[in-house]
Figure 1 (cartoon, rainbow, N blue to C red):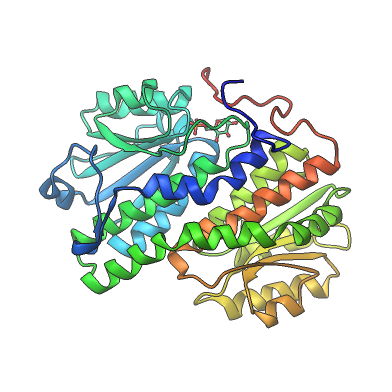
Figure 2 (cartoon, helix red, strand yellow):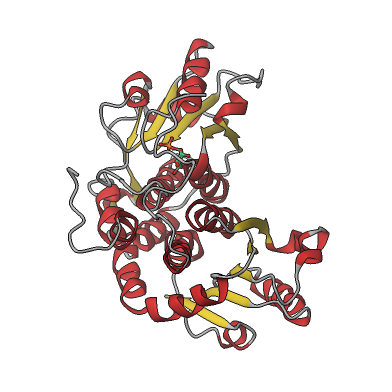
Length: 369
Ligand code: G6P
């Protein structure tokens, strides 16, 4: 293989561990501290054109779709723009109303996913500027888009996407800051957001240095189960979806991601001693509500694994296994919170003897419909 394993047992593990570096690479040269904003060289749109945008549509598949959903929450918060996240396979055949103030982005690690390429071509055919957030330079999507953002996270080999997800979320955070600063986001808030992103590589290094023993314990709890619920709220709802997808993809255990508070409208019926729940619950504005959802699962004797802010004794006390991440501002929490879930899926798959880098029935890049 052209890309070396460099002492790691699998590409997926190597790519998980590379993330402090790859997030740094995705952001390199894109901070404009003096103006408290972020900047991209390849959007091919003037600030004036970007200011005219009234709505954003993201189209993607798989993990890229989850990253887009984090982007939706971030752009809503920082730039107050409406965002819709579409499965590329649906978007391309629908008659989605797009006006001339709608900006379409497609997101793809490989730049070759057939449905995402189809969405790009359909949007361009209707005359919309269609930008791409892509990792692979020279890919079909990168070549056909009217502009865009490269992830610069290096080739991703493991079929289950990891470092491309965090690189996508990092650039979407910068995009949200950029769009926010063209509108109402203040200098001070813009700078605080920039500084929060800049601090992530180091914080993630700390997570990776300490967390594996707790992950191994959590993996042992999950290895024999048939089904796992992943719950997250707000920015962590897409993180929960991504955590569930990772487990499904490589360990073949059924997993479902759900918004935490929606649990009571269905999934809680599944909770019993045999159905563990993974809560993605770093401290934030809705934390007290999340804690009471965790209590509801506890009352039904479900195993609780939680990703939370270090020092959060209330959450730790009601969890069977607590996976701590450093205390960082909410907007950058997804970049840290997803990593324990990637490692959890990895270790569960390892315990089950699965072929981690080449899971059955899946392809790294799906170039047919
Ligand atoms: C496949 C891969 C996933 C990936 C998805 C979208 O299903 O197995 O890991 O997220 O395609 O790929 P893209 O390259 O467009 O991001």
